Length: 310
Length: 225
Image (cartoon, rainbow over the protein chains, first blue to last red):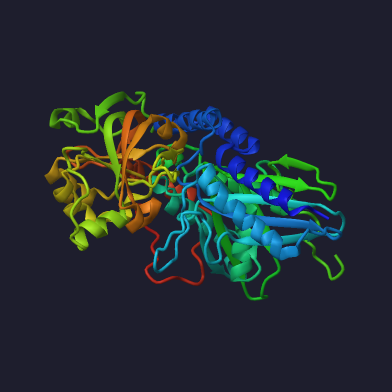
C-alpha cells in the first residue's frame, strides 16, 4: 500500500525539479547545438540559455518566467494499491500543484477560458490534466510531471494515404517554419510527431512523443527510427535557428509515435517541447522508497501494444 | 549569410534619452537599469477600454513596458517572492499598442517575438519608441536576477497575479535584443527575409496536402502574426 502523504510530498518536489532543473538529455542536446551553431545571433541566444540553466539551478529559481501548464502522467503496476484509492491520488496531485505554485514560485497560468478567473494556483476545471498508464508487473507508482508551454508550436492536420511521406514532410516543415519565425515555438526544441489514431489520440501521441521520450532514443520500428533521424536533419537544414534568426538549430531531437487509424486517413500532429523542457519523474514503491529520474520510460512494449493479447 | 560582427552589448536606462535610443541598431544586446512595469491585455483593456485611471505616474516613474507575468507570489504580510521573469508574445497586443504608447509615454516595449514592421511604422516611430525582445525564450532566471526589488503590485485583486501590474526596480536587467529601431526597421523581418530566400530548396521532395484549408498559402515569406 502506497502512503498518500508520500505521494503528495514527492509530487511537490517533482514540481520544483521540473521548473528549475533542465533534464540532462536535453541539456547535452542543446550544448551540442551550441557547439555546432555558427549564426552570430543564434549562437548568442544558445549561450545565454546555457547560462540561464546554470543560474536557475544556482539560485533555485524557475528557468523560465512562463512556467507552462503543469500536468501529470501517472503509471502504475498491476499490483499497485494506493492508500485512499484513485480519488485520494488525484486530490494529492491537485494539492501538490497548488502548493508548489506558491512555494517555488510558479506563474499561476491557469485561468477560465471565458471569464479568465485565476485561482493563482494552476488548479481549476480540468487542470492540471492527469493521465494514466498501466504496466503488467509491479507494485510501484510512477509520477511524471510535465510543465509544457501552451501557446505556439503545435498543429494538427488530417492527411490521407495518398499524401505519403512527402505530405508528412510538408506539414512538418510548414509547422517548423510557421512557428519558428520570431522563435514563437521557443526552439531549438524536442519535436514530437503523432501519426494515426483519431484526431484526439493523434494529438495525445504527438504530445507524449515530445514530452515523454528522451533525446537520443529511437522508436523500436527501425523504419520509423530512420524517419526520426531524417526529420531531425531536415529541421536543422531549414536555415533557421533560435528565435527565428539565421542558423541551424531548430530540432534537438524528433520523436515519432504512431497509432492505428481509419483505413482512409493518416492523421498527423506536430508538437514542440520548448527550450525549458520541463519534465521530472519519481517512482514510489510499496515499501515507501522513492527514486527520482528524468526519463519517464513511458513508451514500453505494453504502452505500444499491437495485438489483441499484448 | 552569417554576420561577421559579434553583437554589441549596451547598458540603457529604463527612461532612455532620445539620443540613447537613436544610437541603437537592430541586433544590439541591451541591459536595462531603472524601473520597469508589466502591462499586457488585462491592463490595456482596463485603462484604454474601461477608462480607469493609471495607478502610477507614467512615464515619469518608468518608460519601459514589459509584456510579462512573473513567476511570483505575494505573501500574507505583503512581501513578495519573485523567481523567474519572461515575456509573453507581443503581437497579440497590436490593437492596443498605439493608444497605449500615447497614454503611457512608453519608449521601450519589451516582449517576446516583436510586433509587425507595420506596427512599428504606424505607432512606435511617431512616439519615438523601440521594441526590445527577450532572449531565448526565455532567460527567466537571468532576468529574475536583474530584479532588485518589487516596488509595487497594482490591481492584483482586479486582475489576478498574472495580469496585474508589477513595478520592478532593475539593475543589469537582461539580456534583451534590439528588435526595432527609431526608423521602424525589424530584426525579425530582416532574418525572415534571409531565411525565406533558401526555403524552396528545403521544401524539395515534399508536396502539398491533398485536402486544402481555406486561406492556405505556399508563400514562404508569409507570417502567422
